[in-house]
Length: 153
Image (tube, rainbow, N blue to C red; front, top):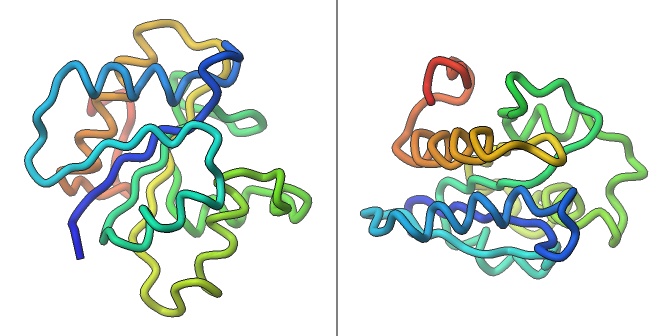
């Protein structure tokens, strides 16, 4: 099993949903990263399952609404994602949320560590750069439970 993947999701053609794609672009400019794969997830949703199942640590990056981001960025664990979303967010239209909810049924007990980096919609370029930095810090093994967004990047 491979170590870490950063999956950036969103829609390049809708600015308010393009944060993940902007982070992807920054990460791709600054390659290479040893042991870290960066994937443009776009709007693939459940179709990202083959990528997720092959890694020990999965970092998902997307635009968020309805969370209280610290300095424009939310940092959540798998359990926090599940506890902060409504059941209505988990249908086939729920994109990666549907994927996350489906993981126990798809993978059983071998669910990878999942870290979600959520970015407020319509962020400024500095927030996008900080989110890219945070992706790399999390990929290098920093503990999401003790991480402080504003201190790390």
